Image 1 (cartoon, rainbow, N blue to C red):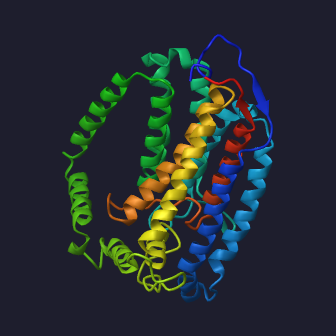
Image 2: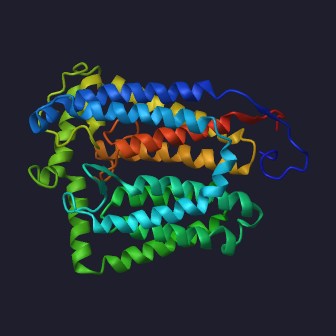
Image 3: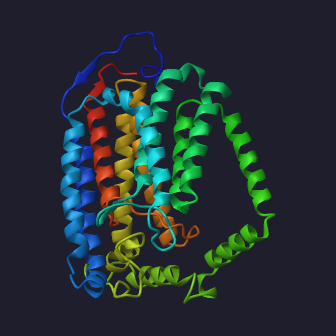
Length: 379
């Protein structure tokens, strides 16, 4: 990695086509995700909207728009994003504040409505975090071991974004933002001792929070439901129980695409966070492993693009955007399988959501743009 991080020799670069392997993985996940989202949603859509194609029609429109955005950004020189780093952060903060002026949905303020359409500012905030962190690390890489440059500014931004997202409430997005920020700070070269201090500080804050009866009781109840969702199978544990039924009934090879039973109003909103449960039921263990494998291959190829990037900004940008997909997929699968408490997080390319899909494909376009300029000289 000396070529990418400060070697005195001037590297040579090639500018050509995009990484076709990475593009292939993106398209496979997108197409497969659309098929499974339709399979998971048509019964729910017919019952609640009178139209089995309600969700897939909208998702296809956003997918087409997202592919256009991906192609557009893949043709850009990614260095132009340096100019938009702080602006994107400012816009994200404003939008995250505006959500609290919007009508709540299921007691949550996560969306901004424009007529009948809505979008989640937290999706934009994830990208802004990656962009501004990549910008800062590329400028101050030689000072990343210090607290002033390697921890303090990043910590302020993380606290700001997490502090705005958490009260929505949106625990899953908060966790993802914090983990994503930690990954970028670590890859950016921050000293490990600061992570240890952060862990101690976080543990201390959690301990103080647990001294508040309302927080302690709620947290303990969530942990109890996580450990045994059958304690309240018709209430707090209902979605997890139905998800486990779906996974268990899938067996080795599954019931076949379209043959899920849990999506028939047993599994709440199967087109969203728990679409992977339908994947497990219809395609079985083998199909679930293949989906996970394709996510792993996408992450691997994205990191290879990061390693070969022309400069540190490209490396950090590709790393952050790839890490977002990987972290989100891991967290979603963990929630659906009850490996971690239910936090409500979408599965990239699979879960219904126009803002998420468009942002995701646009970000994949940026990674493809980075892949167009790779180092020729071997390390």
